[in-house]
Length: 241
Image (cartoon, rainbow, N blue to C red; front, side, top):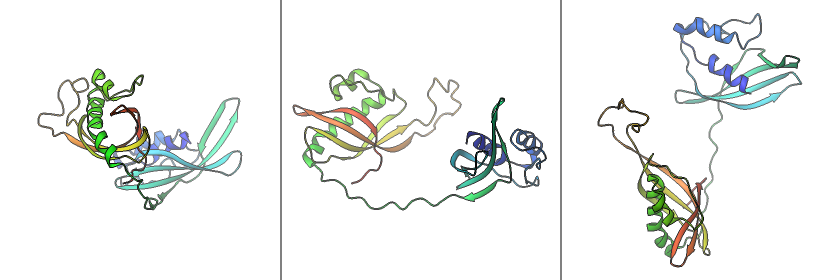
């Protein structure tokens, strides 16, 4: 499947100025005697990014059709690539054995409505200021301050200043005991220019506006005394409520 994805990176990117280079690159993938441009007449342009192996349909021990997913402009599409495989003393070898085919990608799945959990308003009110402090220090990387918001013995990595905490957008706290699985939607400030370590010459230029990025997290929190502490943090998956 990796072979097909590498091939797709060459096959799906062409323009008239790059025709000779493209044919030379394709030669590493296609069978002897096949059209050097593999069906392209040398006109027009196509560009593809986000190329990933998607599926494989095995015909027999030597033949398969690999489907590769890619993005071209605003469109998601698939490329079907017939592949021949041989294995022997020279190791595993692959070759494109026929004409590829571009296909439209399937439409997104229809997401059904999901009911939110029964929420605990009192616990939510208690947790909000704790979570704001946690996320502020989770972003900044202030280890000493961050430890004030996590359970004893827990050590969490942080963003170390890559982002800045902007806002705790929402919190969903289900009814439960001293340990809860909660969901939080957070807004980060994304720097408008690269940090000094990666942009020492300030090539982004002055006055670049910072951005805001909303993301969702699932946290395990534990109540000790009258305060809540974070025990774990990961991506939220599907957020409800």
